[in-house]
Amino acid sequence: MDKREQILHIALELFYSRGYDAVGVQEIAEKSGVSKPTLYYYFKSKYGLLEQLLKEGCTRFVEGLEQAANFTGDLRGTLWACARVFADFAEQAPRFYHLLFSMFHFPHESAPYQAVRPIVRRQQRAVEQIFEAASGQLGNMHGRQKQFSLGFAGLISYFIEMKFEESKSGEICISDEEIYSLVHQFMHGIYS
Amino acid sequence: MDKREQILHIALELFYSRGYDAVGVQEIAEKSGVSKPTLYYYFKSKYGLLEQLLKEGCTRFVEGLEQAANFTGDLRGTLWACARVFADFAEQAPRFYHLLFSMFHFPHESAPYQAVRPIVRRQQRAVEQIFEAASGQLGNMHGRQKQFSLGFAGLISYFIEMKFEESKSGEICISDEEIYSLVHQFMHGIYS
DNA sequence: ACTATTATATACCGTTCGGTATAGAGGCGT
DNA sequence: ACGCCTCTATACCGAACGGTATATAATAGT
Image (cartoon, rainbow over all chains, first blue to last red; front, side, top):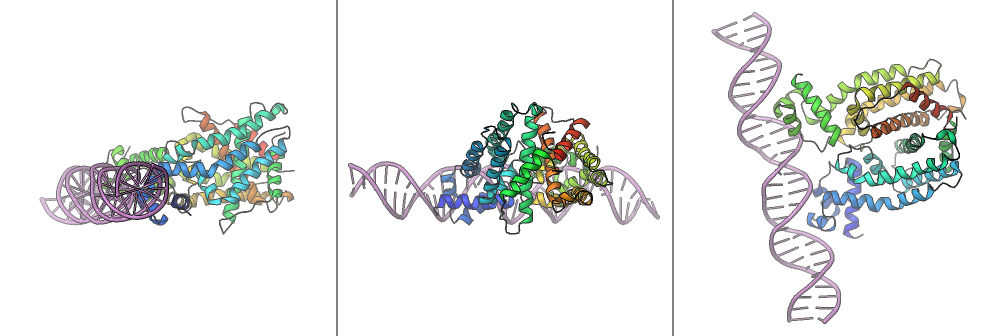
């Protein structure tokens, strides 16, 4: 692994476990086996390192989500596909997933939130788009697209969070059935 | 306002807007109009200040939630009462609410999360208790209490977050009808 | 009046923070 | 052999960090 990758890897590990602000550049460099100027050579600042980390870790996820959110008439299927993208992401890159979603909730003026803001936006727009496209079919959701999209995203991410808390290894596995059940719950409530 | 209260007030404002780690004790003291040793006189450390802030701000909320979560046979009514407690809290202390819920998502090893952990626990237990009590009535939710409780909490907090993002003033108002609709959505899905 | 306790400030501690000036090593084309 | 570009380290910067030793007002009990 080259040094640049190594730095990103260690930074993820540290930001994940203690948070961006609580981790010093010094420590990242030392644990990566490089000196500080090397880190500053690749990423021009601590913030730049965070940005790059997010950018390189999210590309596939966000693109996958946008593709899955392409509504073609089947709401259940579309929601299922989106939930699957979330779940795959959380399975394949659990630390990264956790870091990302914790940053979603940071104070809006903080540096970490500034860095995730574009990703939050893209993710939210993708999910909203589903319900906007579907509102043509389902009159009763008119004007409630935003409520539904946030509700859906909230349901998914809380479910994944629950899986993390259950897991001892830090790794999780989410079956297709679980996702189906979750989407079903969202669409038809807890009684069915 | 006495100095102790003033410090807590300013600390809330600063932690809310930039996060615990990014705010220095110096700044809190200066903006509160006191010197650092005064701050350390009332709260023995920066972390102690955070703990005290959370404790004093949460007591009423958590107690209210535990009371509302007392299941007496009416699931819809119980969920409604709980959601109302969340909403009241968010209305009455928006900054505090936001700070608290952002800390729920911090890295588990970080100092801020250590401080909110007991509150998270109490809150989760209260909501779980509802579904455990209700599972006697509703066979189909057996074994899924945790999923439901996290799903419910997720739905509520995402809804409130949405209200915050819509609001320009930072203050929000959540009507009884909105809460009813939210609980209904949770129980019967988005189609009804 | 004397003493003890509470509440406050000045001035300082060592450490760590994010970031950089400078220089050297290694390959690479000419 | 020379200059150029990429990569890396030593050693340092001023500022800010969390926290404290010490002194002093003010208040209250006796």
